[in-house]
Amino acid sequence: MTTHSSSIPATKGLAVVTGASAGIGAVYADRLAKRGYDLVLVARSEERLQALADRLTRETGRHVEPFVADLGRKDDLARLEARLREDARITLLVNNAGIGSVASILKADVDEMDAMIGLNITALTRLTYAVAPAFAARGSGTIVNIASVVGIAVEMLNGVYSASKSYVLSFGHSLQKDLADKGVRVQTVLPGATATEFWDVAGYAAQKTSAITMSAADLVDAALAGLDQGEMVTIPGLQDVGDWTRWEEDRRAISAKFNNAKPAPRYGLDTASAA
Ligand code: NAP
Image 1 (cartoon, helix red, strand yellow):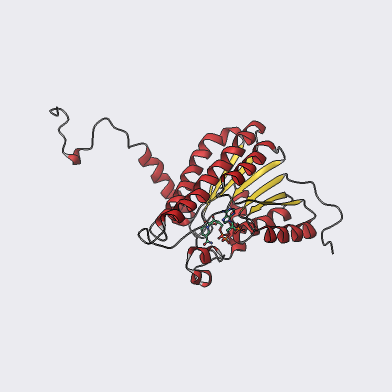
Image 2 (cartoon, rainbow, N blue to C red):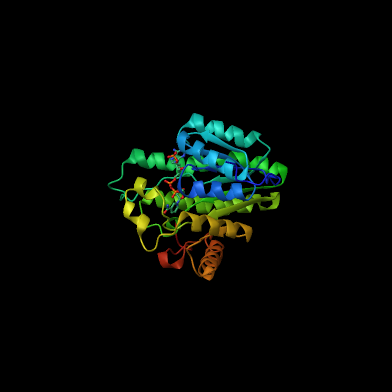
Protein backbone atom coordinates (compact mmCIF):
# COMPACT_ATOMS: atom_id res chain seq x y z
CA MET A 1 0.00 0.00 0.00
CA THR A 2 1.23 3.49 -0.85
CA THR A 3 1.30 5.65 2.26
CA HIS A 4 2.64 8.89 0.79
CA SER A 5 0.31 11.70 -0.19
CA SER A 6 -0.79 11.78 -3.80
CA SER A 7 0.96 15.14 -4.38
CA ILE A 8 4.68 14.49 -3.93
CA PRO A 9 6.58 17.73 -3.23
CA ALA A 10 9.26 18.88 -5.67
CA THR A 11 12.55 17.13 -5.18
CA LYS A 12 15.47 18.75 -3.35
CA GLY A 13 17.68 17.00 -5.85
CA LEU A 14 19.48 13.73 -5.66
CA ALA A 15 21.40 12.62 -2.56
CA VAL A 16 24.05 9.91 -2.78
CA VAL A 17 24.50 8.04 0.52
CA THR A 18 27.33 5.52 0.86
CA GLY A 19 27.02 2.71 3.38
CA ALA A 20 23.25 3.05 3.18
CA SER A 21 22.29 -0.58 3.70
CA ALA A 22 22.52 -0.41 7.52
CA GLY A 23 23.13 1.74 10.58
CA ILE A 24 23.77 5.46 10.24
CA GLY A 25 23.59 5.44 6.43
CA ALA A 26 20.18 3.74 6.41
CA VAL A 27 18.84 6.41 8.80
CA TYR A 28 20.28 9.16 6.56
CA ALA A 29 18.45 7.55 3.63
CA ASP A 30 15.19 7.54 5.58
CA ARG A 31 15.50 11.15 6.78
CA LEU A 32 16.65 12.53 3.42
CA ALA A 33 13.79 10.82 1.57
CA LYS A 34 11.38 12.36 4.09
CA ARG A 35 13.02 15.76 3.49
CA GLY A 36 12.28 15.46 -0.23
CA TYR A 37 15.48 14.08 -1.74
CA ASP A 38 15.59 11.39 -4.36
CA LEU A 39 18.31 8.92 -3.46
CA VAL A 40 21.14 6.79 -4.72
CA LEU A 41 21.90 4.24 -2.01
CA VAL A 42 25.35 2.64 -2.11
CA ALA A 43 26.59 -0.53 -0.35
CA ARG A 44 27.56 -4.12 -1.12
CA SER A 45 24.37 -5.80 0.09
CA GLU A 46 21.91 -5.68 -2.82
CA GLU A 47 19.10 -7.33 -0.85
CA ARG A 48 19.23 -4.80 1.98
CA LEU A 49 19.51 -1.83 -0.37
CA GLN A 50 16.55 -3.03 -2.41
CA ALA A 51 14.40 -3.60 0.69
CA LEU A 52 15.21 -0.10 1.97
CA ALA A 53 14.62 1.46 -1.46
CA ASP A 54 11.25 -0.30 -1.75
CA ARG A 55 10.17 0.89 1.72
CA LEU A 56 11.26 4.49 1.16
CA THR A 57 9.60 4.69 -2.25
CA ARG A 58 6.41 3.26 -0.75
CA GLU A 59 6.44 5.65 2.23
CA THR A 60 7.64 8.85 0.57
CA GLY A 61 7.07 8.51 -3.16
CA ARG A 62 10.67 9.53 -3.81
CA HIS A 63 12.79 7.88 -6.48
CA VAL A 64 15.28 5.62 -4.69
CA GLU A 65 17.96 3.73 -6.62
CA PRO A 66 20.11 0.98 -5.13
CA PHE A 67 23.71 1.21 -6.36
CA VAL A 68 25.48 -2.02 -5.46
CA ALA A 69 29.20 -1.39 -5.07
CA ASP A 70 32.14 -2.52 -3.00
CA LEU A 71 33.94 0.78 -2.44
CA GLY A 72 37.11 -1.14 -1.62
CA ARG A 73 37.25 -2.19 -5.28
CA LYS A 74 38.69 0.22 -7.83
CA ASP A 75 36.21 -0.69 -10.59
CA ASP A 76 33.16 -0.24 -8.37
CA LEU A 77 34.55 3.01 -7.00
CA ALA A 78 35.19 4.26 -10.55
CA ARG A 79 31.55 3.58 -11.50
CA LEU A 80 30.34 5.72 -8.61
CA GLU A 81 32.93 8.43 -9.30
CA ALA A 82 31.65 8.65 -12.90
CA ARG A 83 28.09 8.97 -11.66
CA LEU A 84 29.09 11.77 -9.25
CA ARG A 85 30.94 13.63 -12.00
CA GLU A 86 28.24 13.32 -14.63
CA ASP A 87 24.82 13.41 -12.95
CA ALA A 88 23.87 17.09 -12.61
CA ARG A 89 20.84 16.23 -10.46
CA ILE A 90 23.14 15.34 -7.53
CA THR A 91 22.97 18.01 -4.81
CA LEU A 92 24.24 16.10 -1.76
CA LEU A 93 26.89 13.44 -1.08
CA VAL A 94 26.96 11.68 2.28
CA ASN A 95 30.33 9.92 2.59
CA ASN A 96 29.28 7.51 5.33
CA ALA A 97 30.59 4.03 4.44
CA GLY A 98 33.29 3.02 6.87
CA ILE A 99 34.60 0.13 8.93
CA GLY A 100 36.37 0.06 12.27
CA SER A 101 38.37 -2.14 14.58
CA VAL A 102 39.21 -2.26 18.26
CA ALA A 103 42.37 -4.36 17.77
CA SER A 104 45.64 -2.87 19.00
CA ILE A 105 48.20 -2.05 16.33
CA LEU A 106 50.32 -5.10 17.18
CA LYS A 107 47.35 -7.49 16.95
CA ALA A 108 45.68 -6.03 13.86
CA ASP A 109 46.26 -7.62 10.46
CA VAL A 110 47.99 -5.17 8.15
CA ASP A 111 45.94 -6.22 5.11
CA GLU A 112 42.75 -5.48 7.06
CA MET A 113 44.21 -2.11 8.02
CA ASP A 114 44.99 -1.45 4.37
CA ALA A 115 41.38 -2.31 3.42
CA MET A 116 40.16 0.05 6.15
CA ILE A 117 42.30 2.85 4.76
CA GLY A 118 40.93 2.01 1.30
CA LEU A 119 37.32 2.48 2.41
CA ASN A 120 37.60 5.14 5.14
CA ILE A 121 40.15 7.34 3.36
CA THR A 122 40.69 6.49 -0.32
CA ALA A 123 37.04 5.96 -1.27
CA LEU A 124 35.90 9.04 0.66
CA THR A 125 38.61 11.12 -0.99
CA ARG A 126 37.97 9.88 -4.51
CA LEU A 127 34.20 10.37 -4.22
CA THR A 128 34.75 13.90 -2.91
CA TYR A 129 37.16 14.63 -5.77
CA ALA A 130 34.55 13.36 -8.24
CA VAL A 131 31.70 15.52 -6.99
CA ALA A 132 33.41 18.70 -5.73
CA PRO A 133 34.33 20.17 -9.16
CA ALA A 134 30.77 19.50 -10.40
CA PHE A 135 29.30 21.23 -7.32
CA ALA A 136 31.75 24.13 -7.69
CA ALA A 137 30.85 24.54 -11.37
CA ARG A 138 27.14 24.66 -10.47
CA GLY A 139 27.83 26.97 -7.51
CA SER A 140 25.97 24.73 -5.05
CA GLY A 141 26.03 21.35 -3.38
CA THR A 142 26.69 19.77 0.00
CA ILE A 143 29.19 17.15 1.10
CA VAL A 144 28.69 15.44 4.46
CA ASN A 145 31.67 13.40 5.65
CA ILE A 146 31.23 10.99 8.55
CA ALA A 147 34.32 11.06 10.77
CA SER A 148 34.31 10.01 14.46
CA VAL A 149 35.15 11.43 17.88
CA VAL A 150 38.11 9.03 17.87
CA GLY A 151 39.56 11.23 15.14
CA ILE A 152 40.34 13.48 18.14
CA ALA A 153 40.29 10.95 21.02
CA VAL A 154 42.75 8.88 19.01
CA GLU A 155 43.84 6.47 21.74
CA MET A 156 40.36 4.97 22.22
CA LEU A 157 40.13 2.34 19.43
CA ASN A 158 42.38 0.83 16.79
CA GLY A 159 45.03 3.34 15.77
CA VAL A 160 44.54 3.05 12.02
CA TYR A 161 40.80 3.52 12.41
CA SER A 162 41.32 6.60 14.61
CA ALA A 163 43.90 8.03 12.22
CA SER A 164 41.55 7.45 9.27
CA LYS A 165 38.95 9.54 11.07
CA SER A 166 41.54 12.26 11.91
CA TYR A 167 42.11 12.36 8.16
CA VAL A 168 38.40 12.89 7.52
CA LEU A 169 38.35 15.79 10.00
CA SER A 170 41.49 17.41 8.54
CA PHE A 171 40.32 16.85 4.97
CA GLY A 172 37.04 18.52 5.90
CA HIS A 173 38.83 21.63 7.21
CA SER A 174 40.75 21.91 3.94
CA LEU A 175 37.66 21.33 1.83
CA GLN A 176 35.84 24.04 3.76
CA LYS A 177 38.70 26.45 3.06
CA ASP A 178 38.89 25.60 -0.65
CA LEU A 179 35.18 25.31 -1.44
CA ALA A 180 33.45 27.88 0.78
CA ASP A 181 33.56 30.68 -1.81
CA LYS A 182 32.33 28.29 -4.52
CA GLY A 183 28.93 27.82 -2.91
CA VAL A 184 29.77 24.29 -1.75
CA ARG A 185 29.03 23.31 1.84
CA VAL A 186 31.09 20.71 3.69
CA GLN A 187 29.97 19.30 7.04
CA THR A 188 32.10 16.89 9.05
CA VAL A 189 30.15 14.77 11.53
CA LEU A 190 31.86 13.19 14.54
CA PRO A 191 29.66 10.46 16.03
CA GLY A 192 30.58 8.97 19.37
CA ALA A 193 29.64 5.35 20.10
CA THR A 194 26.46 4.66 18.13
CA ALA A 195 24.31 1.51 18.27
CA THR A 196 24.97 -0.11 14.90
CA GLU A 197 26.50 -3.25 13.39
CA PHE A 198 29.75 -1.27 13.18
CA TRP A 199 30.61 -2.79 16.56
CA ASP A 200 30.05 -6.36 15.36
CA VAL A 201 32.48 -5.71 12.51
CA ALA A 202 34.90 -3.84 14.79
CA GLY A 203 35.03 -6.70 17.31
CA TYR A 204 33.25 -5.26 20.37
CA ALA A 205 29.51 -5.99 20.08
CA ALA A 206 28.88 -5.06 23.74
CA GLN A 207 29.35 -1.38 22.88
CA LYS A 208 25.96 -1.39 21.14
CA THR A 209 24.13 -1.59 24.48
CA SER A 210 26.44 0.55 26.63
CA ALA A 211 25.03 3.46 28.66
CA ILE A 212 27.05 6.00 26.64
CA THR A 213 25.92 4.70 23.24
CA MET A 214 23.59 6.84 21.11
CA SER A 215 20.91 5.52 18.76
CA ALA A 216 21.59 5.93 15.05
CA ALA A 217 18.28 7.81 14.77
CA ASP A 218 19.31 10.44 17.36
CA LEU A 219 22.77 10.70 15.81
CA VAL A 220 21.45 11.41 12.32
CA ASP A 221 18.65 13.73 13.47
CA ALA A 222 21.19 15.79 15.44
CA ALA A 223 23.64 15.79 12.52
CA LEU A 224 20.93 17.05 10.15
CA ALA A 225 19.92 19.71 12.69
CA GLY A 226 23.59 20.76 12.78
CA LEU A 227 23.61 20.94 8.99
CA ASP A 228 20.47 23.10 9.06
CA GLN A 229 22.16 25.39 11.61
CA GLY A 230 25.15 25.82 9.31
CA GLU A 231 27.63 23.92 11.49
CA MET A 232 30.81 22.90 9.68
CA VAL A 233 31.70 20.33 12.34
CA THR A 234 28.92 18.55 14.20
CA ILE A 235 29.54 16.47 17.32
CA PRO A 236 26.12 15.27 18.48
CA GLY A 237 27.32 13.82 21.80
CA LEU A 238 29.34 16.88 22.90
CA GLN A 239 27.08 18.71 25.34
CA ASP A 240 28.94 22.06 25.56
CA VAL A 241 29.74 23.37 22.08
CA GLY A 242 32.12 25.84 23.76
CA ASP A 243 34.52 22.93 24.33
CA TRP A 244 34.77 22.51 20.55
CA THR A 245 34.97 26.24 19.86
CA ARG A 246 37.87 26.66 22.29
CA TRP A 247 39.72 23.64 20.83
CA GLU A 248 39.26 25.02 17.32
CA GLU A 249 40.41 28.52 18.36
CA ASP A 250 43.52 27.01 19.98
CA ARG A 251 44.24 24.97 16.84
CA ARG A 252 44.02 28.06 14.65
CA ALA A 253 46.11 30.11 17.10
CA ILE A 254 48.96 27.56 17.26
CA SER A 255 48.81 27.15 13.46
CA ALA A 256 50.06 30.72 13.13
CA LYS A 257 53.12 30.02 15.32
CA PHE A 258 54.77 26.93 13.76
CA ASN A 259 56.93 28.40 11.03
CA ASN A 260 60.13 30.03 12.09
CA ALA A 261 63.57 30.05 10.47
CA LYS A 262 65.19 29.41 13.87
CA PRO A 263 64.61 26.36 16.09
CA ALA A 264 63.14 27.19 19.49
CA PRO A 265 65.64 28.10 22.26
CA ARG A 266 64.72 24.91 24.20
CA TYR A 267 66.78 22.89 21.69
CA GLY A 268 69.89 24.74 22.72
CA LEU A 269 71.18 25.54 19.26
CA ASP A 270 73.28 28.66 19.17
CA THR A 271 72.32 29.56 15.64
CA ALA A 272 74.76 32.48 15.51
CA SER A 273 77.82 30.20 16.01
CA ALA A 274 76.52 27.01 14.33
CA ALA A 275 78.57 25.93 11.32
P1 NAP B 1 27.38 -0.14 9.98
O1 NAP B 1 26.03 -0.26 10.58
O2 NAP B 1 28.31 -1.30 10.05
O3 NAP B 1 27.21 0.33 8.46
C1 NAP B 1 28.28 0.41 7.59
C2 NAP B 1 27.77 0.60 6.18
O4 NAP B 1 28.87 0.65 5.28
C3 NAP B 1 26.88 -0.52 5.73
O5 NAP B 1 25.84 -0.03 4.92
C4 NAP B 1 27.82 -1.39 4.90
O6 NAP B 1 27.04 -2.07 3.94
C5 NAP B 1 28.69 -0.31 4.26
N1 NAP B 1 29.97 -0.83 3.82
C6 NAP B 1 30.90 -1.49 4.55
N2 NAP B 1 31.94 -1.83 3.79
C7 NAP B 1 31.65 -1.36 2.54
C8 NAP B 1 32.33 -1.41 1.29
N3 NAP B 1 33.53 -2.03 1.15
N4 NAP B 1 31.76 -0.84 0.21
C9 NAP B 1 30.55 -0.23 0.32
N5 NAP B 1 29.86 -0.15 1.46
C10 NAP B 1 30.41 -0.71 2.56
O7 NAP B 1 28.19 1.07 10.63
P2 NAP B 1 27.75 2.56 11.01
O8 NAP B 1 27.95 2.71 12.46
O9 NAP B 1 26.45 2.92 10.43
O10 NAP B 1 28.94 3.34 10.30
C11 NAP B 1 28.73 4.42 9.42
C12 NAP B 1 29.88 5.39 9.57
O11 NAP B 1 29.86 5.95 10.89
C13 NAP B 1 31.27 4.79 9.40
O12 NAP B 1 32.08 5.66 8.63
C14 NAP B 1 31.81 4.70 10.81
O13 NAP B 1 33.23 4.77 10.85
C15 NAP B 1 31.17 5.93 11.43
N6 NAP B 1 31.09 5.91 12.89
C16 NAP B 1 30.38 4.95 13.52
C17 NAP B 1 30.36 4.95 14.91
C18 NAP B 1 29.61 3.90 15.70
O14 NAP B 1 29.80 3.83 16.93
N7 NAP B 1 28.73 3.11 15.08
C19 NAP B 1 31.04 5.94 15.64
C20 NAP B 1 31.74 6.91 14.95
C21 NAP B 1 31.77 6.89 13.57
P3 NAP B 1 27.43 -3.47 3.23
O15 NAP B 1 27.97 -4.37 4.28
O16 NAP B 1 26.12 -3.90 2.64
O17 NAP B 1 28.43 -3.11 2.18
